[in-house]
Length: 395
Image 1 (cartoon, rainbow, N blue to C red):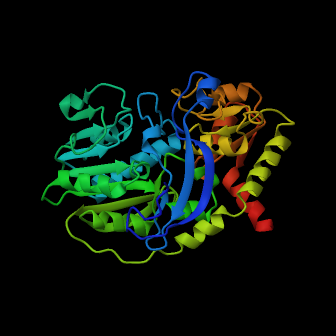
Image 2: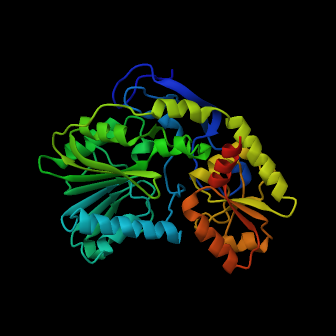
């Protein structure tokens, strides 16, 4: 039965604002055939917004449907724009937050790109341990300074740390306080620094980005609810700020008692307004695709969660879009979870005579346009979020 009590503050009666049936439960699994991609497990997206603290959660989430393993691929650092962002984040940790030595534990390290960058920074002299069941690669690096554990971080695997970094994991956890309290228990009595990064749901609502809501992200935070969750778990929060063009929240805290101001902000109201008109938005996307495909193939850009969700909403039968483009070689030649769209390299897309690329994240528009120009492609590069905003302004 769907739950309506908030997992962060315990407030009752969190209101449903969005219901999507039979959505793919995974957005980042890779498949070898279209049939296998379309056969992915499906679940219900029943999103509720807490009127007390602003936390947003999927009341129908079933973790038993998920399978995070070697076929799960969500690395983003193949993009120069995202790789530069990681460099900035690492430099901030070392030069501004004083993460220069000791043991850094990363919860959900993926393929290890972030920890590798951190230990490569000239100002960092410590060691690192990364936890992730999807990790592929050598178990030890940097002469033993860095090691990886191919398992979930939890009470039975956690190790002592001076610093804990958790990037884009907490939104996958249905009971985020359990994860936070596990980190707190493993940290011990000292003033351990913790850093959490997660999408900002207020950013999604204010910009009306439907493809940013999907099954894997069952726990979505505002700046307020993230600070509150950390405080309730036994951390003193020094700040929560927006990063990556406002799309993500970056929270910094230490172990210890702290206080966090009350108040949910406008999240519940934003959620209700967000859900209005989703069918109309999808119809506009279909018309846009149909218009451009008269001149040649139209493709979405990015075979991650945004791309998979957009394709599920706009082209579930894979009849309109010729494919999805991704710069990550590990994804190229595979098929998109849920819809079975082929995943192409930029070179293959250009060679196919790409007529239009639908870019779902404004942070990558310049990168996509520059890359296609270098390949000699005359295809239109459409910032779909900006295009949607322009349509809304004229409605």
